[in-house]
Length: 436
Image 1 (spheres, rainbow, N blue to C red):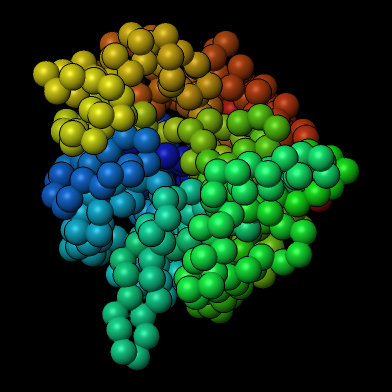
Image 2: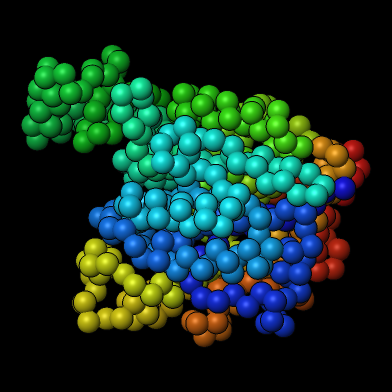
C-alpha cells in the first residue's frame, strides 16, 4: 500500500513550526505519515536575488530559500515549480531558485534551464513506490516559457508552458465593427506592414485581429480557448516516460483560467486532464486560482481541479521592488506589510474578504500497487480572522467549519458526477466499484 498526500499552493514566508505548534502538528503528522507528499511551490525561494521583473504574477513572491527546508520538515517530498510567479525575479532569480532546489536534492518539476529540462519528468523514490511527476502551467506572461535548445544555441530558462490558442466569436455585425476600429486606429495597416516585412503571418480567412486578439463571426458571443496541440503532445511525451519508469504517474497543472465562475475550471483544463489520463496518468492535480474546485473521477483516476491555498502568507513578503509599489499605486514610504494592508483596503478587498481563499482540503490517495483504493479528504482551515502574521497557517478544520468545507467540495464535485461520503470531520470519495 502507498499513500500520497496532496496540497495546493504553498505561499510560505515565515517559519512553519510544523513539528512544534500544537495547532498545526496533527495535520502535518498526517502529511509526514504519507509515503509521498506533494505541494505547489507558489513562492520563489531565491533569497530575493535576481532582477525584479516588470511583469510579476500579481505580486513579487520572492522568499528566503530556507522555506524549502521548512516544507521538507513538514513532510513534503515533491514540488511543482511552474507558476505565474516563477519569473518574478527574471531568469537570474529562477536560476538561483533552481540551484537551491537542486542543492537539497529535491524532487521538483516544471521549470528548467531550457524547454526540454522544464518538460522532463521528475521522480520521487520512496521505500514503497516511485512516483513520476510532470508539471506545467497555462498561466504565465509572454517570454516566461522556457525556450528550446538547438545544436547551435542554448535554450532559455523558464516554465513548462501549456500555451492557449484563443479566438473570440462575435456576431457578424460586431465583427464588422471590430474591423472598422482596427482600420480607423491604423492598427490593421501596421499589422499588414509587419506581415509584409516578414515579422507576422497572415491569419486564416474570416479572422480579424485587434491589438493581438483574434475574432471571427458566429451565431453567439463566446470565448473559445484550447490548449496548444504541440504543447499537449510534448507534455504527454514525458508523461508517457513517467508511466514507463515509475509505479504512479502524476500530472500537475497550474491554471488560473476559469469557466463560468472561478470555481469552475476552463474547458481546456478538463480536456487536458482527460488527455493526461488517457496517456497513462494515475492522477491529475490542479492549483492556481487559490480556491477549491471539484473532483472528477475519470476512468477510475482522480482529477483534482484545484486544491486552493494550502499556506497563505502572501501578506508577509519581506521585500518588494519599485514595480510592485507602482502597480498598487503605493508610496515608497510604505513598508511591505502596510502596502498589502492598503491593497486589500484593510481586509475589505481581495483574499481577506472571502473565506473561500482560507479553506482547503488535503486528499490522501491510497494505492494498492498501481490501483487506487481510497481517497480520504481532510478539511483544512487557514485561520481567517486571526492576526495577519498568524493567519495563513494550515490546520485541520473541525465542527461547523470542517462540515462547510466538505459540503462545498461535495457540491462542486457533484457537477462532475463524483460523490463524497462525509463521515464526521473527513470525507471519502465514492469510487466506481464501491471502494471509498
